[in-house]
Length: 342
Image 1: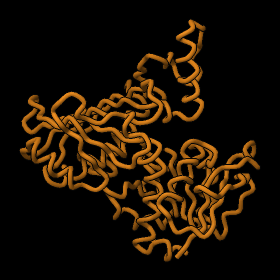
Image 2: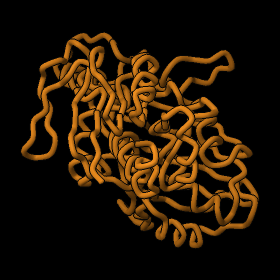
Image 3: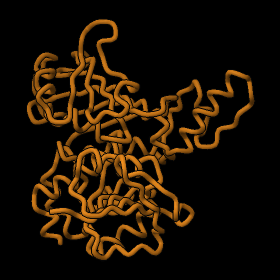
């Protein structure tokens, strides 16, 4: 069965990646629509190697008769238009933060909790988790199944593409300016991003953590296990694409690095690159354009009874956003849920 798919936010970095991923994975599409705000109406975006789509105006777009809506237009826009699409019978897979913690909206990573998709029919909306959460739970899931995760301490090293095209442009422009000593002023970040690290992503909450850190805590619990304790420090770094994470995990049962390494090598969506030698690990630069979550530096954490530490990287525009959304659509198709919705 082939489907009519609307990509909402099609001119953004994630929307373009969604179109690219649909074509690369040969998702069964009968028709594809590129949809965005009024200021982008009439612009052209690519779908596959030989197809160009004209962007349609989201404000007037009729979702009736469309099977799937892949949304990435920003939370405020999704809040308005995702329910409108869902009410028209279009199954919405939303990449924004707006619906993630609503109890009747599944929050899904297909390698981790595909069973949650069975609950999407009440709202006709499925939420894509935060990019930093996705890669961490993909790595944690097979270890949790075997050893039971009790506590996670994670520090993220998140690329500027997570903040959109304007943020990527700012890193590029400010990096060039630094070499010629031109004055610059941060516009998309709270401090200068070129040659710097900023320990703030999203706004601060009353308890001192940022919204991004809060997302990692509550989303991990919703997706993986509500009993897992999580503390996160999220940092924006001067990298264009790819998020890195230093993860320290305390388990209920004994675990050795060798056992973890063997389990992760067989885990879906995970690639282990873990040689104890110079350069024997994966970095953000190397994961850009790749689908997997790469896990390296697997070692014992001697500060807790059953502790493990590892490093993981992933392309935040692909597995952290577009790919995960398309995989959700693939899982819906494989489970026959799209046919039921239609």
